[in-house]
Image (cartoon, rainbow over the protein chains, first blue to last red):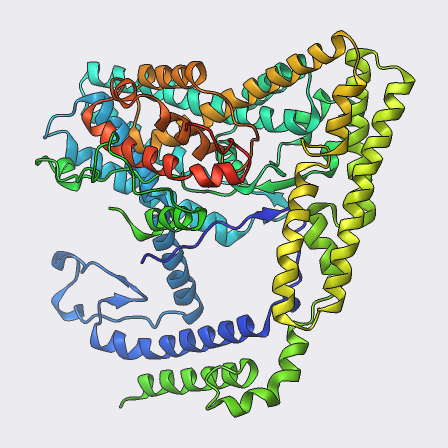
Length: 332
Length: 276
């Protein structure tokens, strides 16, 4: 089973002091630190055995013409342990995000496949661009997570992995597709983004309406102001329903509060607002590596058609297990 | 054995020893456990203030929770008064009903709090109390003046003349608006699996809104509710909107929606006889 690191639900009140953490966690942290320290201690030995390895990243050999024969002996500087540990931690985090974000890349690739009628020759370049942009998104998200939400007193903007992947793919598509294919892709991608934005805004306004009993005019005004000040990372608000109806996304006060009147403001100030980090959708997109390699499709279809009866109803627990299996078990 | 693996083993040994000493992991036999029982109970003991955090969550404690409940009620009353020109007698009646609901809720909280304080050092008992805390959380989060409240039962009897019809129309309009939002959100999420084209997406949203009914209650199962509703539409109608590959991606979502029926009934989104 793939290891999952879910984006934490950060409530406005999640300021638990670290001293209160259970001792077991601290002991585990100590153990981990000791293991990492010992791993660092092993590095000089590894470096001696494999002189072209610096830290944990293999280094390409220099071209022979640039190094005179007499000076060809490779001197490897001992890596600074702290830097090596940070690099390893960073890479570990990136690997986790690569797994987490892969469904986003697959969804974007499938969208291109659906609307562009790609030739076998066009597919590999686009798949490669997808993998590259996936890596870029994972790196940016890992960096955001490592540096913390607030850096030098400034609240960091959460990167939108979906946007990074979309933009990376859009560039590749532009350079690969015919003018006609590209026009169709652009139109469909725009319509898709607009629907997602509309769904997000409607969802937030409906949620606010449920608690603040907005007037029809207020609904329209709030939808308009959210639309005009739209930020890509707000797309994550689509997932806030996963937490239950008591939670609200952190809508900036200057966006919402001016649209409310006094009694509504009082209620709004008391509701729970959460920072919705990246969450995967409820679904697992199909992958088809062979097709993207320019070969025949290797996808496997579902087991039975819809008009056959299902094997009775399942409980919530079973449904949850099934969903988690789809998310983390990898229905690749 | 060279130096580095040996160091690694020593470090692991020390770390494992620390864990064992503190947490009781790897105790050689059961005879060691009673000796540690008192220490373990101290670890389990939970500060009484946590109870308020659990029940009232973001609102923090009973005082601020009561203020939040009052604020929500005042907002509702203000809107009703503004929309239907309520008389003072009508307002007083609704205030009384709301204060009854609020009192009943805090009475329930105090009963559970007492149980919590009695059983603080018994982990098994705490587990049972947690079962009683969860409905309180849900009630607090969802608002005290929902369908089964005294307020909701009194309201239709308090309104007069065309106030009733106007109020029903407002509620129905809200329900439809919220359903539209739930459908749009569900299709946006489903898009990740099915990769709709714009025309397909639009047609599917319209089909759901035109041919299916909103849930009785909205909540965290809205996505599954929409999938459930989609699965109840004639398969050939849905299939006609998508191609073979998209259908293969859509089919598991419909199956999952259908399999959530019992959960949706349990959460009050649909009635037990829905679709039967």
